[in-house]
Amino acid sequence: MKILVVGAGLTGCSAARLLSDRGHDVSIIEEQGRIGGLCVTNTSPNGIRYEPYGARTFHTDRDRVRRFVQGFDDFNGYVHRKGIMIDGELFAFPIAKSELSRLPHADRIAAELAARSGEIDPTNFETACVSLFGPTLYGLIVENYSRKMWGVCPTDLTAEWAPRRLELRKDDRDGLFRGEWQGLPRGGYSQFLERMVDGIPVGLNDSAFEVDRYDLVISCARIDRLMGYRFGRLQYRSLEFDYVADESWEEERYGTINLPQHPTFFRKCNFKVLHKQESKHNWIQYQRAVPADESNMPMYPVENDRNQQLFDSYLRAACDTPVLPAGRLGLFKYLDMDDAVESAFLVAALAESYPSLSVPARLEAISEIRASV
Ligand SMILES: Cc1cc2nc3c(=O)[nH]c(=O)nc-3n(C[C@H](O)[C@H](O)[C@H](O)COP(=O)(O)OP(=O)(O)OC[C@H]3O[C@@H](n4cnc5c(N)ncnc54)[C@H](O)[C@@H]3O)c2cc1C
Image 1 (cartoon, rainbow, N blue to C red):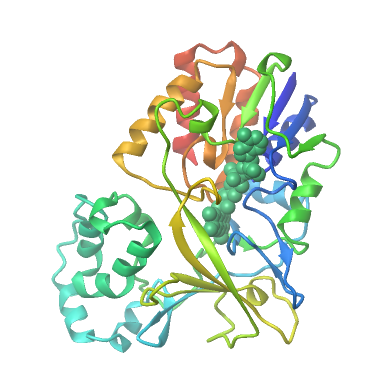
Image 2: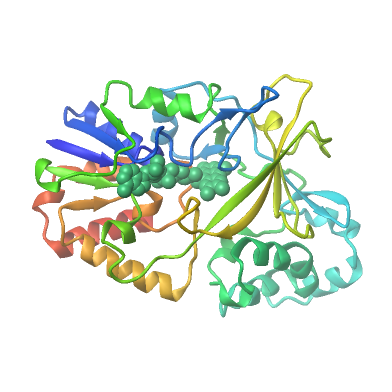
């Protein structure tokens, strides 16, 4: 088949590689002047490798994903540990039960935890979190962080995120992705993806294509944009970054530290730790969340009823065209990098049959991929 992949991020590059290896005639277009999408690695002025769209650790418990990505670089074995600053004290995050006594209002927190019913209140994000943590701990570690991250009151967010993202550790092991294979590609994400698409034609600074010239187009672009924003825009949050060179870092075991009480930033990252780089320098990135607009990258899909309904309309409309939506922007879903690669495997398996499927069968197939990653 003659296949065009729109977007040279991790999903597009992975799908292109898999389909090309199956003997298809694959090419890619990418509207930016470089490949990678959000998975880009630069070098700081003081010589530290860093990710300009935010630190990212590859982690997976899927064998085929691990084997696939290891084909393009060695990974550095970095184990992601996240910290959190509360009242000037550093804790491992998620916080371990054994550490709760160090928190301000420790007695009240303990009493509230003991009084929990065990049921998660699914009314909204705040009610779900309060039922998990009690009001005081929720106020300390979640409330302000979520307001800064999402720009709305936590009662306006869906409860679904709470059990996925939050927990109290019952033991003292502090790695975030426990039991998963993890690390960063030694040469950085840009080189890793350049190697992945070796031999596949990539048209940079290009977003124009004629559907009729291909047997299949796989689009990793925003699905609302693909469909001409005809139902309105899906909402995303984006990030802005400040950098500080050679600032002291609380503890070298933590690659990122959450800052729930900081007036502006919600997180900071130390790239020397993530890249396990030997250097006397540091390169620290401070992250602040802003609404996504024309001037920045759409990063985190805002999960609410309005956006879900809008996405459903767009997906139905897209299934009526020969274009297969994929990736985090095509599926309007936050995907970890291993989900992105896994989704590329699923898209590659669907590609040959997709053009001849009925519209309802396309809808079902893409919805299944979206639900499974
Ligand atoms: C701040 C942040 C931190 C993250 N950290 C982690 C982490 O630690 N671990 C982890 O596993 N995952 C992490 N992720 C998720 C990870 O970034 C994604 O899984 C991955 O980037 C998804 O790749 P993608 O190809 O689907 O999307 P993208 O990377 O967005 O790629 C889409 C590409 O399509 C191009 N494009 C869009 N529209 C068009 C068009 N019309 N024509 C041509 N090209 C177009 C874009 O320019 C882009 O290059 C993080 C995400 C964010 C936002």
